[in-house]
Amino acid sequence: MSESNKKAVLLEAGLVVDGSGGPSWPGDVLLQGDRIVALGEGLRERLPDGLALADVEVVDCRAKVIAPGFIDAHTHDDAIVLRDPLCLPKVSQGITTVMTGNCGISLAPYRTPQSLPPLTLLGADSFKHATMAEYRAAVDAIQPALNVAALVGHTTLRFAAMEALDRPASADELARMEALLDGCMADGAHGMSSGLFYEEAFAAPAEEVTALARVVSRHGGVYATHLRSEMQQIIEALHEAGDCAFEAGVPLVISHHKCAGPANWGRTKETLPLIESLAQRQKIAMDVYPYVAGSTVLREDLVDGVIDVLLTWSDPHPEMTGRLISDIAHEWGVSEQDACLRLKPGGACYFQMQEEDVERVISHPLTMIGSDGLPHDRHPHPRLWGAFPRVFARYWRQRRLFTLEQAVHKMTGMTARNLRIADRGLLRAGTMADVVVFDPETIADTATYDKPHGVSLGVERVFVNGVLAYRGGEAEARVLARAGRMLTRGSAI
Image (cartoon, rainbow, N blue to C red; front, side, top):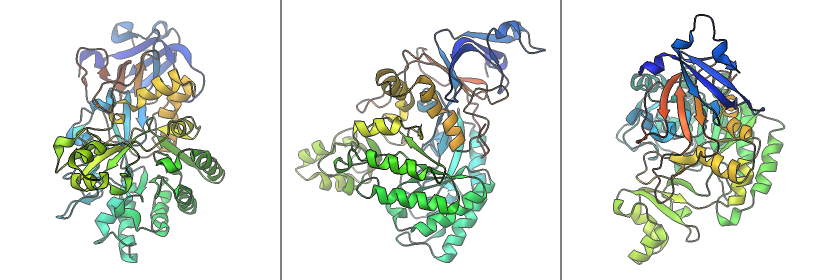
């Protein structure tokens, strides 16, 4: 740790956007140890007792925003925080906490036997943690550059408890899943996620999910779901998710809400009022990434010959990575679906959303920001490196869909509250010192679909648990320190 990181840090004369969604104000934020110890104006003249100005590093934040560290509500970073603990794609965006275990896929509680692991979103050789306690120990041992909070994947539970996934769980299998989930929740997991859209979980009936969600409810956690359908059957899928969560008595998070496929463009005019109606009877929130393309594994049913599909990786044909499947199909003289079959296993970006739908969702008061980046892809979706700065650059500064304070709230206080992340997400005296300083006029993404590995602009300083983890504007973007922690579920401030 550098000498400057051992000193108290006074972030002086910035625009304080505290994460609550309330008005910003000009002032100072004082960090000492791993906590925020004071906020106000002219703090250098009234330091806390026992702290001399000589013991304080003063950072001039004029024309800069001082905000809580951003919380990525939706990630697949379970394995990458262990493999590459510097986490540069995230820390360089101002992200200080990631929520892992989404879409039904978590590393724990599952140790890979000879069979294949759940999907390939987390890496084929990553499933080594039979309990959440084992995963926690691995994160604590490596100490990544940012904080990690975890959901337990429903699909992972199925792999751990069932021999065949093309059917509902038996009573004994369900009991086994409930016991595994109960242990994970007792070890501090924030909740459960499901990915009913995927083949490994599609056969699970609502009753199976509801039974598991009741376990989450007993522990005060949350339930996040990649809906069974985001296409033609999205209304039915929303009702299913809402009913499962309501019957279980657990808050619901709708993952990466979208209306996918040209036939469904514009249907956020239906889905958002339905979600608002559900919110009248139960706690509900959404996350979204600020792009018109999604990204997941290669699936023939998503390669429809209408939308563009960009290959992000392919085991049999890695040389095709980064190309459109339509161009590959033309080169091979086959249909796009036949090309997809030849390229599998692989992954792709699917340009399946309409910009107007993205804007309706991202500006909705129930929506928080999640990158949904896939860090193991050879040619990843640019959201991995640029989602959070893009919200500021495109949807606040350019489109003016919300205020600066609302944008920050969607990345901080709202997320901490919805996901049961304690002691973070707001700038308050006594809370953990996860803080980002950024230039509101220049913050922007640089990652593109052609060149997806791009460090964002305008993120000047990122503090994780009081330690300077990243400083922008240097000749080479790099993480300066690893001070992250594995977080346990708690009540948000």
